[in-house]
Image (cartoon, rainbow, N blue to C red; front, side):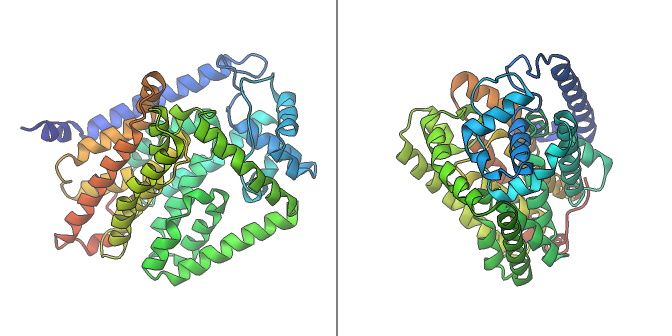
Length: 406
């Protein structure tokens, strides 16, 4: 028996359930310990509860005071943050478009900790609802909760759940609810760098109703935010982008938490321009293969998995909490493998990708070696092989609706 065969055989349903339960229990204990360790609103690492969530809440405070544009002024944002917790280590910047600021504006109506709890519950609920489009079984929900990227997103109070719910829901509903699917994808204008590939896929497959739904949704979202906060918030957003780009390229941002090839090359000392060029060139084959897959018949869930992976490989700017998106290709591949045998190494790849968000960030921090892009490429290859396998069997067209539940 080969190493890959042995690794595939190791991944049984019972092991999946048991290890998932252990991980979820570990997350709960870690979060409880984090809350109990707070001193003056800060944890032992000098960060506020929810870490990045303090940025969202501070921007919400300014928006409710009619000063939304001030969120792009670091001193004004920091002043609000200091009213919520003791001075933190490092500077927290607001770099989201006004659309997202409008979405989170109601947060400051509640006290900080209640707002964090509500934000987590609502976006987490949307994330779990999206996973049910892939698997309706309880073990599928358990695995979705046990995914290490979920813990990273929870600990930071970030928006990985929301991004995954919108992108996953939009992609998986394209066949059944094209207008709704498009509307969900249009809302991703709050994170525009993740929407670069999606219009290409919709145009390449002639999904005109979804394109119309996405256009209407995005335009209404932008118009509402502009009417509510004014054009000056957009000027503030565009003005802060060069600062964010500078922080990324110079290493001012923690590159061990940026799982892109660009960050991996920068950690190795590659200059900015060659690193960016290499990362984009590396992503091109994955984008091309994704377009090819979308133009062919096959399971929509596997196509969605390819689209998510190509999007992550294409963007030089992403963070560890964005890897919650990997729940889509992991779920699609696992669900497909429930009804038929995955290609050799498919189950082993699932284990690697599942563990990657937590393990490889520690490796990047300790060794300055970011291996996540390699894992993303391996996952893409596994999903692609499974997709090609469906085309080689009589079940290919039948499975094009949705994979069987895990």
